[in-house]
Image (cartoon, rainbow, N blue to C red; front, side, top):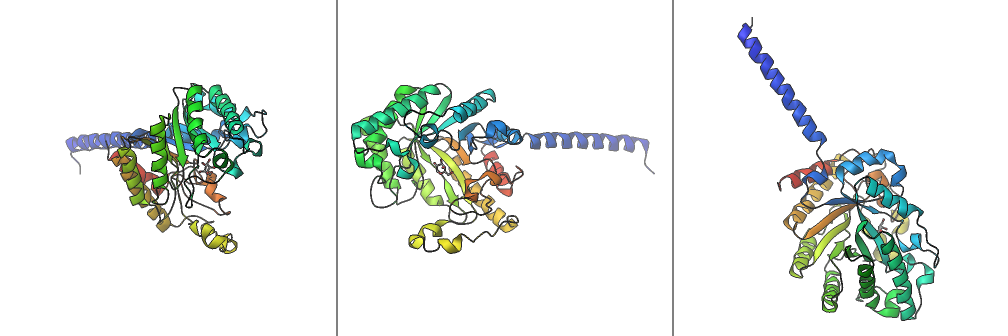
Length: 369
Ligand code: GLA
């Protein structure tokens, strides 16, 4: 038997509990990377985003900045001299503006021959720089005031023993094309934040070259405002110590950083480039997680993402933005590169649902507040 007073008491407890659950639910629903992060969070997304309404809710709830995956690259915008293709980039920019998403432009010069439209290349330095100037003035000028940050030069540092990657750019002009690219971009939009972007530039093999380039920028008073660490990492091989060292080095040089293309590949790819590609034939058949990613792998990925964000947090004064590369696992470039396989490198699965890595990053970020 229950006494009347006890029943009233129980009802009250149930009501309070109910309210508490509702509150917890709404807090969970509003949980998001951008809410908890000490630095703005962005994402590189498909050029087709304006016509993909299914992606909009996830995009808008989690991310502050967007970078177009391909449509602003030189080969997309000006594949033939003087023939400009604005349809996709214009639609992308309009989409961002009308949805209050902030924009990163990518990229004005991609310092690799296979990523540079052929017509650009010439051994005549003045002509090369004039072509580059027209390209940069036109693209940056078109989106002046709308694109807040630009990846001005992408991937100019050499993977081997040279300072700069051999390309028609470096052959014709040495490092001058890099310095000039920033000057032209700055003139075209003096308010844009200008970034030098590269991969592996935190590693001992490239960091000294990155530092040397920054010192050139400083000596020359070149308007470079941040260094982009692309951040394409691999499970169990994330170079935590190198990343921390690179961030400390950037701090010493008083240079801001963006992490521009973050992901953690769960099907390690380094062997693709080993032994002059001898393992490619065998690797191209490797597709271990086509029916889903095992919980153990997801757990390790979560741990490694959290550790990474732990380091980023320590340098939050230094970091202007962290962008993932692609919205969810189903859209990652790593499903195709360097061979076709079902990959799981991001915080959201193929249905756009948060993975253990998402929870781990949120947990890590929440501890800052
Ligand atoms: C590089 C480029 C990006 C993109 C990725 C792969 O990191 O900077 O634009 O092409 O490769 O998608």
